[in-house]
Image (tube, rainbow, N blue to C red; front, side):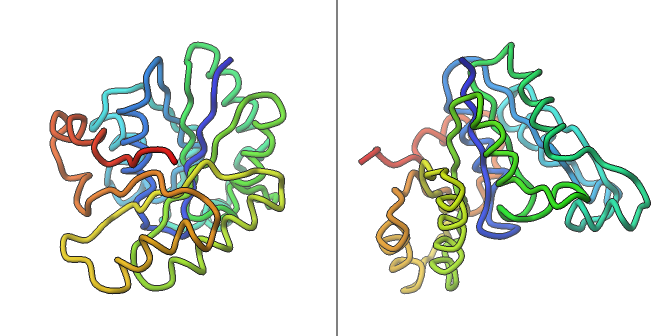
Length: 224
């Protein structure tokens, strides 16, 4: 049966897309990466799925695209467009999953960011997929101050829905970490009760694809 890996973050800009790419590059079998909702397409920058495809070469899909770089429900309301509810996205993920061993689903922003105008979130999507398939949730965290609180809140929200996170990943580790970063690296698994799965160096997404794929295996920590 296809396994789903849900990648969420404790906030925006914590490195979810690069962690998604690293997972896709190091996961054996047939891998698909899905971005249910992509906002900010009017900026002309490549979307998250495009970046993953460039770095890894795996198959990618984006279901819904919205122009403004805002939360999906806000962007949809401002554009005056209807976007699919989370339940539809879950059904579409199941449909495309048939040809793959692993489907990595990258959220938008944090766990409770609304992906539709009905209030549906990535948490709802993960719970829906978990009704029929094995689901692992990976939480991407920042390294600096504030990350302990954000990580505990995210983990708590997952557990409240019966989803135990598979682990945490620090999405962007600075080249010269300070006291806060060093302490947080030790404290994140202690305060959440969730293992630290990996630490990605800052700037990893700027590597060329060959170097990215070669380096990615070294960013994961041994499982406890």
